[in-house]
View (cartoon, rainbow, N blue to C red):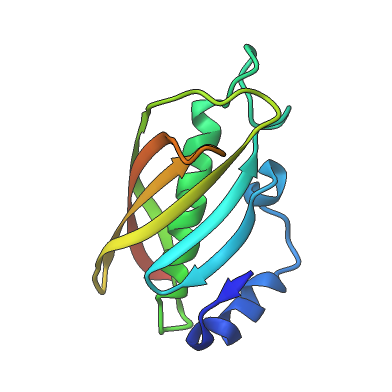
Amino acid sequence: MFIEESLKEKADLYFSFKHKHMGHALGIEIEHVAKDKLVATMPVNENTVQPFGILHGGASVALAETLCSIGGWFLLDNKDKVVVGLEINANHIRSVKMGGQVTGTAEPIHVGQKIQVWECEIRDAKNKLVCSSRCTLAVINKS
């Protein structure tokens, strides 16, 4: 796993969280953490397929929002702030059969004090586009 040097302390905090979350349930594995990009893989298995044995669109959206939200959180300097999803859209381009794996790459396109906008591309093992998503995040006070 690659972690940008300036984010290593925050990455240690993130990876030491004790609670489970959707990323764990879907088998999402983070591979690259940087201020300008977050990359992770997700298996196409019984937890991520729809009844016909192909990647569920909702699983793709969950991967995209997970990457965008984690990436947005890594960009926050204020420890009293977190990011939450305001809006997400996704275009499902290609199916992936059970037994495969997809890779999501999220990159920020706007980082403001109150709003962040991220794009995420999900690709199959042959690097073909599976899903293109855009996620808007609100920067809020941690409760």
